[in-house]
Image (cartoon, rainbow, N blue to C red):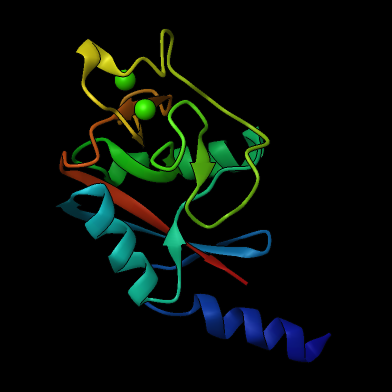
Length: 139
Ligand SMILES: [Ca+2]
Ligand SMILES: [Ca+2]
């Protein structure tokens, strides 16, 4: 048990990594496309954030005050249109869409999901847009 505790502490102890449950999270204030944001997370041994429950959603929302734009999550329907999946391969067990979303707005291909800066609700958007992002380390 002691070893486990130390391991978690070491994993989350990098600058600005925050621990919640079995995971570590880090918000990034620079703006990237969804794919570049995912690469940045993966280069750190993490992935874009996945959200499994309202409890986790609320935890993630508590960091939105730091954001200067909407925030990329790992949710996407790049592989199969209309079938949303997490980039870290977690099963989709929970969603928190804004009213009317996901909508593939104006016929554009909106295949990546952002968290709205103001409300924390989710919106599908073009993956090439620039957003802040949040990485999640799976322990
Ligand atoms: Ca789509
Ligand atoms: Ca949308």
